[in-house]
Amino acid sequence: MTREEQLKYCSICKNQKFKMNIGIVCRLTDNIADFEDSCENYEEDTDLINRLHRKKVSIDSKTAKTSKRFVNYIIDSIAISILYFLLLYVLGIIFIKINPEILNSLLNDYQYLNDLLIIFVMLGYYFLFESFNGRTIGKYITKTTVVDKEGGKPVVKMIFIRTICRLIPFEPLSYLGEGNLGWHDTLSKTTTIDK
Image 1 (tube, helix red, strand yellow):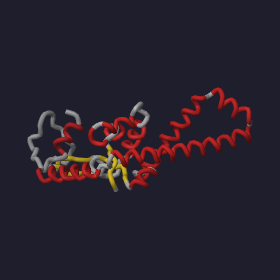
Image 2 (cartoon, one colour; image 1 turned 30 degrees about the horizontal axis):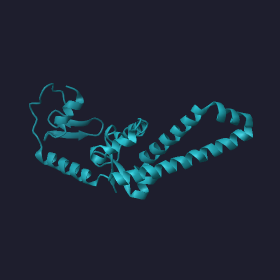
Image 3 (cartoon, rainbow, N blue to C red; image 1 turned 135 degrees about the vertical axis):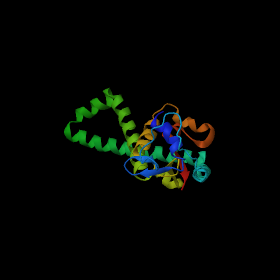
Image 4 (cartoon, rainbow, N blue to C red; image 1 turned 60 degrees about the vertical axis):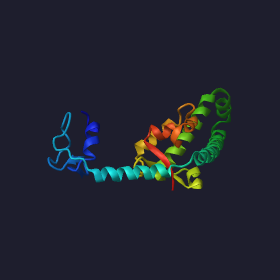
């Protein structure tokens, strides 16, 4: 049994405690779980399960509506476009000062650099805004924020996965499914809720 599978039991056991440097450990042994199939000391903590369930229902009830998320997408797309054109403008000035012929060559022969630049700006925009405060410009305007499945601030790894998933083709169409969640939500175990 893997550590993750063991934690499914340990995280709702009455005999669990938390150690800062290790995580969830057994209160009886003061160590991480070492059982294979089942733990003989396992006692289900129904109060904890009920609290976790209430928290989950609370997060689900606050999930931002598809219309707000669409507005976020439009506003963020405009912000990304403005940042992209500002970056192009600055790079254009730099290249004109250095060597104007390089600029013509880049514009005519290296279209893939332009595509990479827009991807870089988009990924940087989402990653920086969401990892620092869970909100992009669109989310500020619509009063929404990104949280993990427990309602807390997502860790940087979650935001990184969330950001990379935005590159999946047709990802914006994933909202048309059930639950107002896109692939970048489900794959990163995050969601967008009303603030």
